Structure formats: C-alpha cells, structure tokens
Amino acid sequence: MGLVAALLAPGLITVGALPAIVGLGWLQPELWLRGRARRRSARIEEQAPLVLDLVAVSVAAGASVDAALEGAGAVAAEPLRSELRRLAASVALGARRGEELRELSARTGAPTVQRLSAALRRADRLGVPVAGELRAAADAARRERRHAVEERAAEASPRILLVVVFLLVPAALLPVMTAVGLSAVDALSVAV
Image 1 (cartoon, helix red, strand yellow):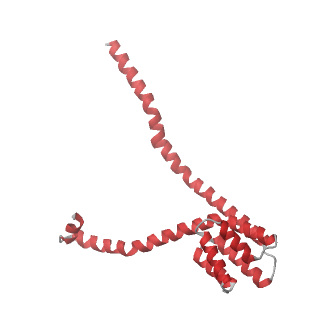
Image 2 (tube, rainbow, N blue to C red):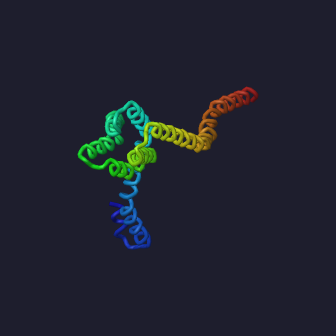
Image 3 (cartoon, helix red, strand yellow):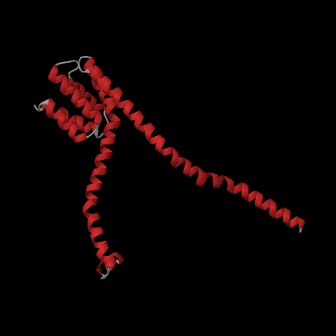
C-alpha cells in the first residue's frame, strides 16, 4: 500500500521511480529467461564429456551413430537426456541427422555439444571414422572444464582471505582478548 501511495503522490520521487519500475518490469522477464538458459547450458556442458565418451565407445564398438546417441541419451541426466531423446526421435521419424544436430547445437548453446554436432556432421559428410575425434573432443571438454574450475578457485582466493581477516581472526582473538582483559581487571583489583 505504501508503494502505491508513493506512486500516486505528486513529486520528484514519483517522476523518477515510475520509469524505473516500468523499466524493471519490462526487463525482468528477459533477464530471468537468460539466467535460466545460462544455467541449463551449464548443466548440459557438465554432462557433455560423458556423453561424448559414450558415443565414441559405442561407435568404436560397431554401433551406428543413431544407436550410440540414443544409448547416450538413455544414460545422460536432464536436460541433456531430453535433448538427445528429441534428436533420436526426430531422426527415427525421418529427419536428416545433420539438420537435427545443427538444431541441437543451437538449442543447447553448450560448446561441447556444438563440437559433438560438428564432428558427427563432418563424419556424415566425409565418411570418416568419428570415434577418435569424439574422444579428442571429450578430452578437450574436460580440459576446459578443469581450467574453468581453476579460474573460479583463483577468483575465490581473495574473497576467502577477506572472510578470514575480517571474521575468523577477530572471532579467534575475542576469547584471547577477553581472557587478557579479565586478567588485567583481576590484577588491578588485587593491587587496589
């Protein structure tokens, strides 16, 4: 009720607040949707090296690419599972695998899935074995993930130092300083 009253009251604050509130209401759904898409892409990216390995092993063992993708889709966790199942269903219904792989890349936005898609499209186009390339892509994805984790750890170090300096050290010194203060008070009371 206070917000409504403030907006209805004439004044400079109302003139400035109203466009800000309208702008926030206009942008909030877009920002929320981008955040959801980014989190979904990150979850897919976490699972992608495992899927690349599964597809590579299946293809090396003699399974077709379609069967390998379907098997990897059965093992993967959501949301990659639903994307791979959608891909397998579309290919089973007669859609071209290259087009479906291109759409999978666009939908997920995950770099590793884009590499998988590119490798499979290239193998379809050129007729070359794909297992080695998929293993190399899985190794590259793992290296990138390890590098990203190392970067986040390096960024966290100064934050941890701030917590230690401003919270933990004073908390550890508080009992010591209390004991010293009580000893000083006892020493002064005995001397008086």
